[in-house]
Length: 287
Image (cartoon, rainbow, N blue to C red; front, top):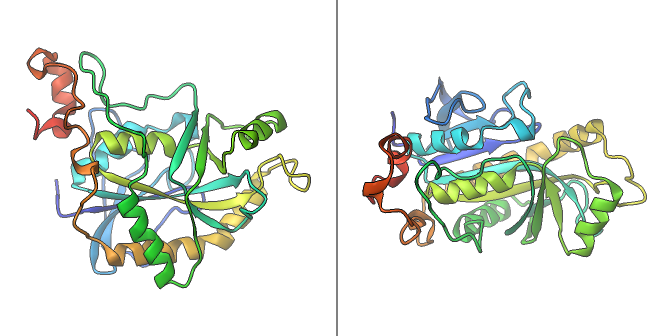
């Protein structure tokens, strides 16, 4: 498996391919956690080797609750990726964060119910630090990329990750607002957790499509509205991604690259062989 691909891009709803990707090939990556959402599109972007993955599959057949987050992130790790840029549609929970804005959130609040969000179980226990779930160093790169592109982004904020696939009730939306949350989506938290366990830098580029249902002018979010605003924002999102890729690689001075150091609770000599084989790629430097 190629290991010269250091940059990964996850495209969310409406972003099923990466503009400007050349010399492309599709790679099907096998993982011990099952199949990723799609094949990885490998190519050259701004002179850098990049792996692109359509989160929901290129024809959008996978619901947020059905996503195999572990396979998706493990696939990037297997390709040698050290940075993941994740783009996704979100709703706004603040008046000042308007549809078509782009936000770089730095916190998550978990409202999911049915998802596996760790690689480590079945005889091994690992507790990574997650107080700061987004890599600030990578977010700096994205923010500078946005400035290079002449596109304004808002830095910081809390992303509520809900289960879905239904949108919020008004009661839920207003509760999140009272709690001080800024954005709501259905996918990014598990990606961030698993990227941290895989010691990959991760950041979210949140493309605001609507005001959720709390706003008196937006009491019924529809897929049509979401897709229309995604299409409008898609161009800016792609420009930011390309500009960020152009600035990479950077020397990783963050803690993401050694997140498992002092996090492994189980004596690795006591871990069942079958379990250890599944996570050997992630633990290689600690074994």
